[in-house]
Length: 161
Image (cartoon, rainbow, N blue to C red):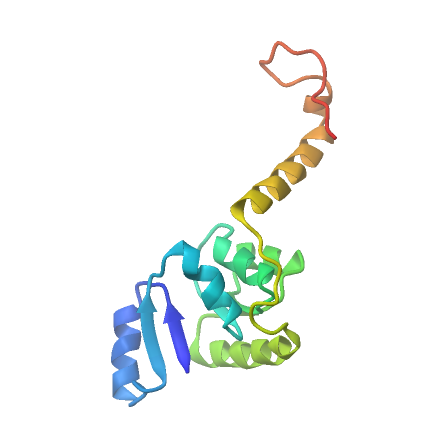
C-alpha cells in the first residue's frame, strides 16, 4: 500500500494517474495530517520521499532521520548536504525511472530499520537544545565573538558550557 501524506502541486495529476492505472486500491492520498500525528505515520513507514526542486532544510527529512527511516530526496544542494551529514537516503533526479530506482534502493536500506515504535521519542525541545548547542559551538569558534559581539556593550566573550 502506498500512502501519500501531505500535499503538493502534483497531487491532482497523481490522483488522475492512480485512477488511469487502476491503482485506487493500492494508493491512498491522505492529505495534510496534524503535526502530532507525523511520528505515528513515520514510524509505520518503510521509506519517506521528498521531491522538490527547491527547499531549505526541511523538518520532514530530519524527522524521518530521527525515526531511522531512509529518505528518497531530490538531488539538489540542500538535500546533498543532509545526506553528507549522515542522513540515510537516496538522491534522485525528479524523473519517473530515477525515483523508482531510488525508492527500491531506499527500501533495501530500510530493511535494517528498527521495528515501528522502537525509536527514541524526540520532542521539539530536544531539537531546539541540539540546535542551540550547535550554534554556541560555532559562535564560540568565531573571532568576532571572541572579541565581543558587534554592537554589544559586553566586552567579554559569552561563556559556553
